[in-house]
Image 1 (cartoon, rainbow, N blue to C red):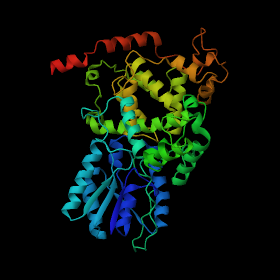
Image 2 (image 1 turned 60 degrees about the vertical axis):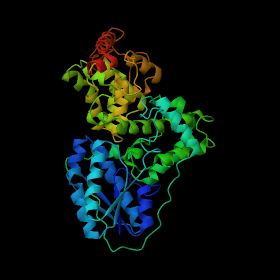
Image 3 (image 1 turned 135 degrees about the vertical axis):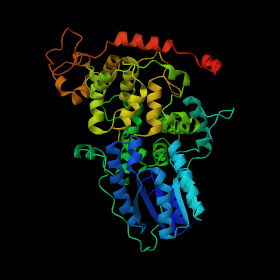
Image 4 (image 1 turned 45 degrees about the vertical axis):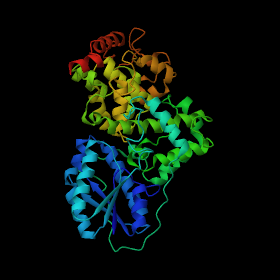
Amino acid sequence: MHLIWLRTDLRLHDNTALAAACQRGPVAAVYLITPEQWQAHDDAPCKVDFWLRNLQHLSQALGNLNIPLLIRHAATWDQAPTVLSQLCRELSVESVHVNEEYGIHESRRDSAVAQALEADGVTFHSYLDQLFFQPGSVLTKTGTYFQVFSQFRKVCYSRLHSALPCVVPTPKAQAELGVQRDPVPTAVEGFQAPSETLRALWPAGEDEARRRLDAFADQQISYYKDERDFPAKPGTSQLSAYLAAGVVSPRQCLHAALQTNQGEFESGDIGAITWINELLWREFYKHILVGYPRVSRHRAFRPETEALAWRKAPEDLAAWQQARTGLPIIDAAMRQLLETGWMHNRLRMVVAMFLTKNLLIDWREGERFFMRHLIDGDLAANNGGWQWSSSTGTDSAPYFRIFSPLSQSEKFDGDGVFIKRWLPELAALNKKQVHNPEAAGGLFGVADYPRAIVDLKQSRERALAAFRRLPSRQEMAEHE
């Protein structure tokens, strides 16, 4: 018998490891519940709940092919070698198949498991699945990992033109194994169940992921470039949670986008091209995770920025976390996150820049808070986004580019529709007042909305001064 160990690849279709295992003979599947590991990685309760709900759908789909899904428990990944070795002995497993995951802890876990299994005579096979290209295969002319997205994208384009990654065939039903599938738990200790309202926003299962992808590709993708920055519009695909859990694959997304654009990457429908670029940003940040392991260790990508004099300001941090900064676009975005487990991408940049620049609070505080609340939390993308916004990362915004929450608000939520949706206490304000209730001398009678916790102009100057005091990369190299 052969075993597929499922992780962030919770789908039946276009699943590389599953297809490979099924070609070898009879297959069982296993999923490890690892609560202490998830807590150590700041996985959000709504994300863990989403995984479990998707597992229930997947268990049913695998069951229809007579592939039993077994559930095993291990507090942390350190116990994975023992738990999986035991299961392989119980079932007389010959080989274990996995789709590669990236990050320091993931790599260590997989090599420890491979070592333990191979000591027992069980072969361990891992496959490229959640990326288009193997990390280490898209390099600069000097053989290093790219640090600038536009250069990385150029090489990816030329590779995709010559060899488009294929969608993997779906396995056929196998003969019954006589192994009972395990019930999928509906909750995990230490992770509070989210509200039914939140769950309803993110239905589980491959059918739902496919429905979203098809609807986006058919109706919305052409408008993506023009509408994706406006949080009140349904301009995004709403697929990020499904991609993060592996309920849909990047290959399926790429093929759907290409289908609407007659197979073109760089010409034709500008919406489709822009969305394919977003898939490549996701790819880029995962390659960064492998090429520059320090970002997995809570370190800045640009080492010279480790010397930044971040403020210890617990009250300001709490105001940001609790959506009471007194800046409507920031507070509306944070309420969206707290209530839905998701935040519009433009607003992720706006709130991150506000925390790291205007409040001068360490980006790691924001990164951790996002991970603890995002249903689509993904180490590579979340870290990449936070380091971009705080000017500590790869391809980062120059430190002197600091978004003004007010101008972002006026530009991307001109009529205040998004703000009023999440801050109903501001519903009576007109479209000029709603962005900055304090501006015209007083709060227009909005008694329960706080005053701004920071002066935007002064705090901008403070951030610029802090960045100017940093040593240059060259100076740091000379001191080493």
